[in-house]
Image (cartoon, rainbow, N blue to C red; front, side, top):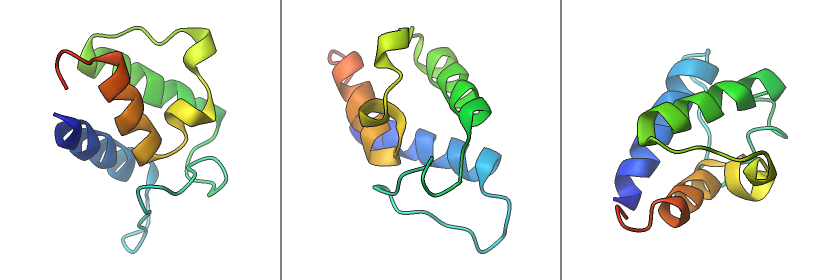
Length: 85
């Protein structure tokens, strides 16, 4: 299941935030520090995760340790949805 999280998150980021054909990111790269997403992008990302996985992301969960890279999001989703993972 964690691989499914990874694939879906990577696909969403690629389709919505990487606009150059040669653009690519690593799984551990900071999306904010790399200029890939901004504060509006974080909100779009949260909306995607909530809609896709039927979860609610609380304000206190909106931290870099949960949402600032593909690896962080995959780990966060695995913790948030342990039964499905």
